[in-house]
Length: 314
Image (cartoon, rainbow, N blue to C red; front, side):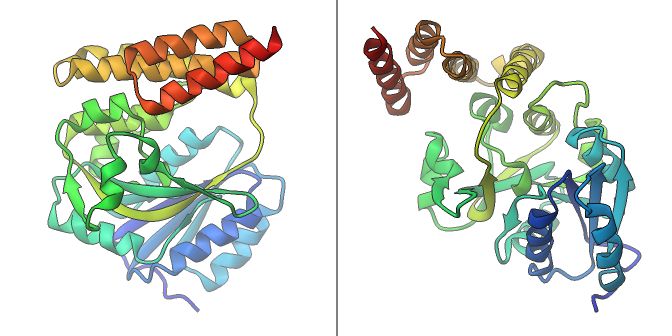
């Protein structure tokens, strides 16, 4: 039997879940394997219909350091915000119900935050894994400004001009984040009114509030679910435009290049949406726009692929 949480837990782990019971069990197992003393776990069941709530009530009997919250289907931003307000620890760790942490992740991150209490948040690299268990590479490998971190000695380091870097490249995986509860509350946490990308919005708010650290550890496995919906892609694109306008003036004081890179990312997202809708010519135009704004090898390859598909249709 697990020990109950002491009155002042060192960290609260927040896990929102919606119809994700089988994966949730794996996520919770990965938290238990962290071996962190005096940990609080808060699972928010957002109106699941797969037996999540009933299972959680049984699970809590042998894991008294876990608390469950039942909501009526308000979405992950609202679910996380409710849990943040109810958390008892000064540090908040986020984990999605279909992701898992690797051994030692949480203790290393807690130790670093306790050495640097001024931090607003920290994050690490993570690995993309398909539903079939296929390794699809790490996040930092994908982004030019972070690629080198995976080749360095494993450590945490403060990020200079963090807001500008995160504006240019949305590299933060929510399941890798450890944040100050005080900083989260001062930023009003996740924006529940955004149609999507509320995580990116929050990391920018936090980065403009206080210092940010990045770890070169690959401490999390992120599940890539098969299939996508154009409606969700459109919502994310709409949110990207909102967030760009929200922060552009403040980011320009740190780096005008970050504005250009963000515009290139938005153009890439528009190209991907046009491709989903089979609007190949419009997709091609957006690829060219992204490439002209921020030329790199990946964008060049994506542009060539779209050009080849366009020619094959003629």
